Length: 217
Image (cartoon, rainbow, N blue to C red):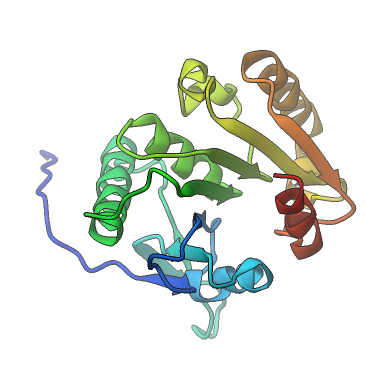
């Protein structure tokens, strides 16, 4: 048996809040976690949208049913199968989205913030690490990597980027692997020294915490 690969063209989905125009001062790319859909994830950002803020929520291209009744659908950025190909495909997809939205748009006086939640943390780190996009702030929310931040991005690439790590003190996924998640935070502080924000909550983008963080920019 021989394994083969072939490149194909796919249709990807994304959602936006606000308008991208001459009034825009801040652009957000909000990347959801495992098993989520961007149409629901983007609602977490309703409260920070105004006539100067434009939010983009790309959706992972691989979808699956979340329940035995085949009612709820979620999406995933990658699995261990064809791992590097999926990483490369995700970067190509996100770069295409970035370029199609912002082509010809002057970003000189516009801040670009990128937020990754859970599985989306690895996705945004790899995307930014590919070196083709502007990023003023990187917010990593409730994700962790067994081999540290260097598993998904060279720490040196974040030296000029304001980076945050945000997590809930009752996050069920982090609490399930306490030694790994604690070591990850310790190593990340040593490697990139992000601003650490711990809130009272579980594995979610807490809207009040998000608003508080943005108020401190």
